[in-house]
Image 1 (cartoon, rainbow, N blue to C red):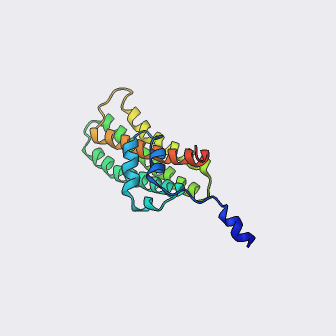
Image 2: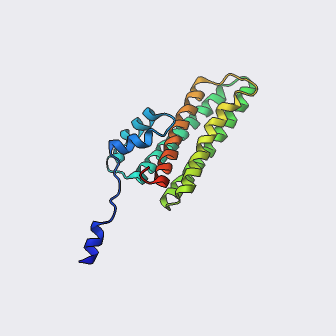
Image 3: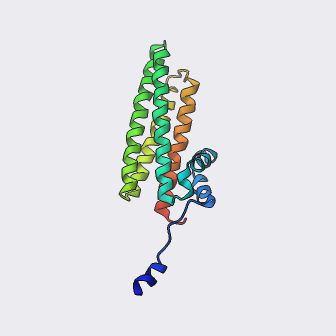
Length: 171
């Protein structure tokens, strides 16, 4: 009987209510992208905070992989050697972002939330670096690449926000 009583006091997992999604998304670079992304995944209806973390990692990974294909196409089309080199460097950045997100999945799986946050921040830094590489010296960045960078930054910031909420509890 004591076993059942102690279970009744156990803290239930926080489910991904609209309020929880709103709390997480308010701490991201692009709250509407966050909300749309999380709500569009059917897993979010029954996910707890860790589940939202996995959904956000999956979405960021998928986006980075898709953008890698776009980057490869841009590289083939580029005629200016400087632009081509920068685009190729961005391709490497995106692969590094995918690798960091793979590690983030493992960190979440094993409950290493500080590592999860670190991996998410590292993944976020790659599209930022890609964007910045076109600024010094100024070289025109292809619009589709700029858009891909902005989206990946936004998606990685969701992973960071989930990690922050997991670290901070209900704050």
